[in-house]
Image (cartoon, rainbow, N blue to C red; front, side, top):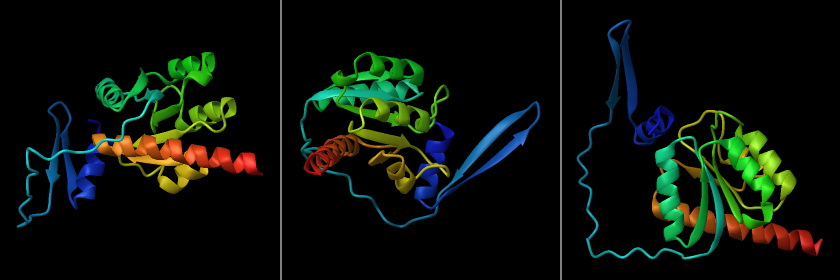
Length: 186
């Protein structure tokens, strides 16, 4: 898990992170959370979570290999064929090669080789109605409103759970369908 995701988790829970660093010695990150008296209830081990099953091909892109692998498993469990990449240039090349074999694109906000803006613009130039999902940890740069203004209708905040991913992909498909229908009726 990267520092931005960790920072997002900590601040979302009312905490803070302090850093202590000494040249030649090292760096220590101290995580502070507010004290609470609330006791969390554990879900019953027999709790069944209904997951919407679907089908289609999803191109998934993140610069962290562990996130890519876990997303691949989650997407496969949901019924999707996942094409996963840790390199945005490779992902874009694969998309350009066969754009109509991809049903949705999920991309991390910060990719070293190609910014999310460049990637989104390139993908939307090729297929303007393709469902796009932007994933990010803590970010001062992007939020849901900015994501929407870029033509990316779904914003998924890291760390996300299995059901979050399922709902985001389903919503992306639904919003894409609505945009297609609106375009056809105009």
